[in-house]
Amino acid sequence: MKIRTTRALQCSTALAAAGLLVTACGSSGDGGAGASAGSTSFQGRGPITYVAGKDTSGVVPKVIDRWNRLHPKEKVTFIQLPTDADSQRQQMIQNAETKSDAYTVLSLDVVWTSEFAAHQWIDRLPEKQFPLRTMLKPVVETAKYRGNLYAAPASSDGGLLYYRTDLLKKAGVTRPPATWSEMTADCAKVKKLPEAKGMSCYAGQFQKYEGLTVNFAEAVNSAGGVVTDANGRPHVDTPEAKKGLDFLAGSVKDGTIPKEAVTYQEEDGRQAFQSGKLIFLRNWPYVYALAEKSKAAGKFAVAPLPGLNGPGSSSLGGHNLALSSFAKNKATALDFMKFFSSEDSAGTFLRDASLAPPYTDLYDNASLVKQYPYLPVLKQSILRAVPRPRVVQYGDVTSAIQQETYAALTGSKSSTQALKDLQNDLQHATAQ
Image (cartoon, rainbow, N blue to C red):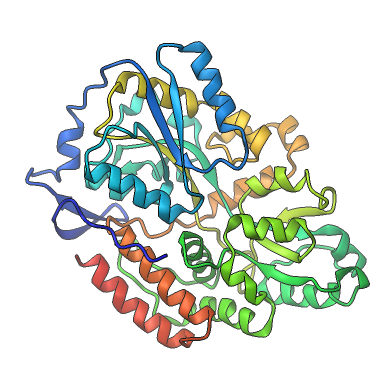
């Protein structure tokens, strides 16, 4: 679905600063959001809401129940939004534009922080009240806007390559592929096995939604290109970007990526991998715990994403907790955010749902690594990850990426034409 955001504020020309494309909104001299945030009063106690995408793990209600037992007069109600990120973002923006107090604590995709802060939809947070020094640095940076904290890191995410260890071993493949060409060659060997009859090689998230933006950015970055530079300027009409998009579009055309994968979101790919339809799958760490409960249990492992000439780069994922500027009971909300984003809660989400924690020492804990062998791979994925465009006009940017990438995947445009058109679209979007 193509999302075009109705902007509640008219913003001036974007300024490039600190690696972000930021927009000066409002009439104050320091950019509006920063001006009002310093006077935020975290007062009021009572019931609040926690708003996030649909919980497929079943763990979120357990953590909220624990809070509710400890705080019977400050109960949290879990509001679940649709699974896809675009719909989540749209509903949160609609709530903010109407200045509704229905949403209190928001679970934001890490790339939304700049947009929500610039529009004054979320409050600036007291940085000293969160243990940021114990977290992975790339994760902390996603929670900041203009050097100030506007969200609390709750979980991180790095893309992983899931692969069938049993089939690769039987085909004589001794290690997971580090490049796209190695992956294609490994698939050819595996598909000769009787056990692999009817299987497809590889899938990611290729439906026209936020997951497609993630997979496109990973392909471009893994081919040595960038979507936007450090100043937020687009650079997609380049040879490197073309190599990345050619890999995706060419793989659909030659069957390496099954044609039905252009309809895949995260859950579609997970189910296809677990049911034995895929040899390789690009997905997030949450899949690990669920796959261990499926018929694929004991038959898979994870590796870094492959790239053009070696290991590729993941898009940096995860979710941050933000406080709606229009919410009530902000003292309760702040305490709940500390509780939900604590290292203890992060450990629960890791153990029960394979969610990537923001805390460094959880990746280095020997007992956890023994129990969750994917942690070292995941840590490196996060540390090497590249953020999606951190721009205020993110809705327009991701919509353009989805539109042009999908056109190339489905064959309605060549990669060359799609990237030329995308460059023009992104230049227009980021100049607003």
